[in-house]
Length: 183
Image (cartoon, rainbow, N blue to C red; front, side):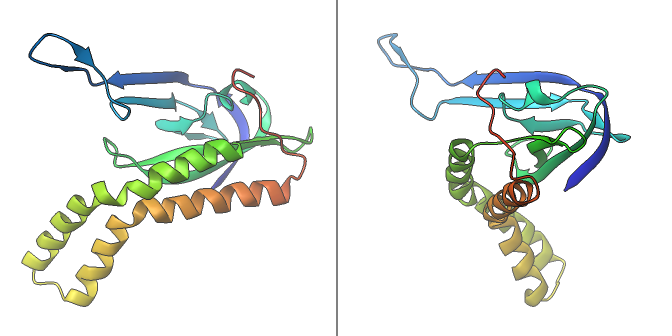
């Protein structure tokens, strides 16, 4: 989706880091490679009268959101293992009157795609639960199966949407740049 209008609120930028620490029987603590998670989001971004709740945003894009300016914000939807289960993410911001545009980089996209490629393993359980509920309601299998497949493969669908959104922004605004972290 592309949201257009004046940015009237930047909201609060938050970076949450959670880490799982394992302690063995001898009191030694360790944390594995996948035990640390970071979540970056904006809470309360408003553009053109549309106010977002938690919207994912890379740390290098947030400094380029400018209050009081006419802008276009390119977004995508992605599954998130938490509440809410579907989250909006910012791919880029464009200031068409100033011929400036900022977009997520190839490295960021690659890491996101790798993460999304593994998520169907986690979304298998919710897909099977929903499928069981729908089967319990005696819905036809031709309706139940596509819904289950949609839930299970939603991370891959989101990855395709993310790539399409970035490509659309780059095609429409070839002058778009990827800012370095911290502006």
